[in-house]
Image (cartoon, rainbow, N blue to C red; front, side, top):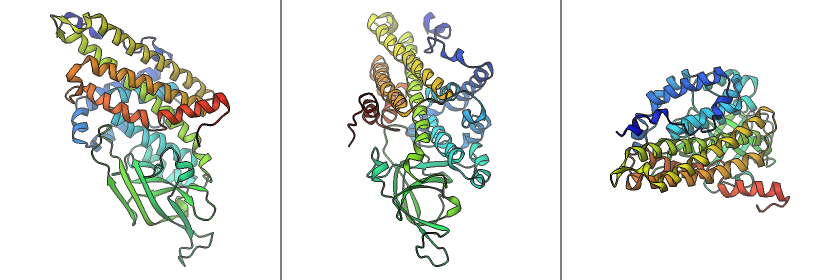
Length: 403
């Protein structure tokens, strides 16, 4: 190893403007605890899990012991909550995605929409990962347009007669959902379906072992391979009225929740850039060509500085968005701008990082290949780049380009 490589720990990090310093001391201490966990329990094994497309269920008790479920609900700042996701993504995007789906969608749904009885029954176990959840919104034929095109149906019946009566205590679900993260192994699925009676969107807490629920893992992915995405089919699945989210009567009711999860995915773009910079800089310092470290060459330095600039700019935008969250003022166009713009910066940065590694950048033996591939999933989910761009375009022009 070169002398420069041995001193790498003394060089500035990708948090070049020290946004982490904006956290309180207890938050910085907790982030350090998370980093230590990720370094010992995740980083050495993440590549193997990714290659085998296996989810490491055995780590869940240790992950739960960090007590990081829904940090804002625990009194932490939104900046801290975002940096938790960024740091997880920095080490393993798949684990961060599991965490986001379970906590920022499933657990937050229980906080936002759950009845006192539902919260009493599920919230503690969900927060502590004794049970796991999934969020079933996307369908085989509906992604960006699922709000208006949702085909999954819910019919309310009387359990005693089995006939529709508009006021029964049982619902029957029929339909299909696709790309459901954690869907192969979760205990519960939050299912969004259209009420046959009035066309309104309803939300249901569905026990994944109920008769009529079938789950199939989506195979052959080139990104987020550790994440267990599933196709889920519901055939005459009977769900008790007690398991319906009574606070949900339209798709509009879900927007606050989806805004929050979209923010967390934008933080994932930050984590991807931090990871790409970490790996590319180390490789540039340690790899020798023409008798010198790659880092000696001007074009390599320019690429690294571009990656660093993208990461710093992205962290700045997200720190500003966290401030707006703390004030209760973050709106969907602002969130959409962060997700779309930072996705593009992420894509540029991981491509530069892959280029610095040359041929090694396409081997999963090297982390950069995973970083590069996983970025494509982030670019698409929680609103594609194009849809988020058009949300912002509508906000700044007053004209909608979305049919």
